[in-house]
Length: 464
Image 1 (cartoon, rainbow, N blue to C red):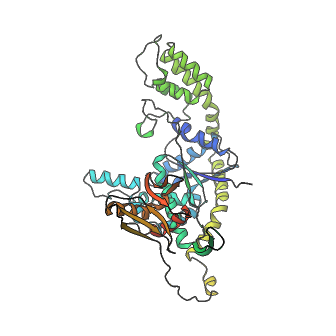
Image 2 (cartoon, rainbow, N blue to C red):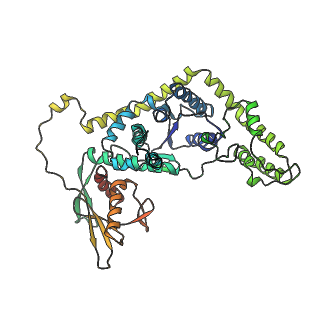
Image 3 (spheres, helix red, strand yellow):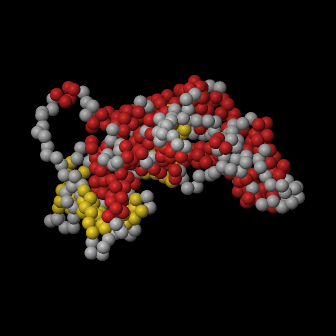
């Protein structure tokens, strides 16, 4: 029987959910949670919210609103793991373990931090003006969210891929340092050809990003992407009168009743189609082509949305009136989640040396081992005038042969990236090794990608 795939999704507790959140994230995520062969984890990221929100009442209120929204929309807490981040003490503990192996140079390149620094520099401010350590360490906390539950898949947009790559980097580095290297015999070719390799126990599972290419993006009242930052949203559970008023304010063109309209260029039709059946969408498309007035189209959109949202709104309002029930659901979810995280952190504490003194006292002293050989990069120039490098395993085997480069500086820059970002390396049969879309080179015969990633993990903590 195939083991279930563990999928983890974080839900930021900031603001009031709107139609765009529902169509783009909530509805598809809940549908995915019902798929067989999966274990789905959904958590309220209230620690993350503190990076930007310093209003305690708003943080609490938002947590209540978001939890009630997901439950009202059909998330089944008995089927999934649904919990609040701050109820899992193992998460910040693991974040500290990871912070102790994370390379500062890698964190310097985090998109959110770089954007804040760039904005300060452009304004003539100190580069770190107004930048909190919380913002700087956001990728570490996110990695702990994922790694604490051995999640294998993390659905993200393209702007979040870097965070998953960092989580892989931190996990690989931790496994390398604390996984307990041991020897295994590998065979190559016939039985007479053998060699020893070193492998580490996988204390932390390296997650994979699942890119959400087809995320529904709804237009707001002004036609731009629906977003709180644009103040153009339609609250998901707005009362009918408010919903009708907001829909009436949707920007349309100046075509009069009876004039044909272009549904495919209409933001109103895009909203309609996101909640309509195929037959309903086809009918509205034809009606607009036939000259349906914008007023009638807006009334049809209101009736469609209100019909879809009314039962969800009723559940939401009932949940909001009973915060104690939501709290009980989150506490039950936390207990369920900690049943996984607590044993893992117990193992990790022992791995890093945070053990009872009595356990250490019964161990016989061990002679200091000779310093183990380390993997290395060998750079050189070939007769073709181009510059190359090889990644060499600690046991002397060549793992990776690079492509040729025009200068030693160019080759060295790619080596530096591999040392810092090596966990993101991917291999495609017949296409070679790639790092963030850049061709690196090829695997040597008989070499697996896992051996390369293990060797690159030895450099991660030294990245500058």
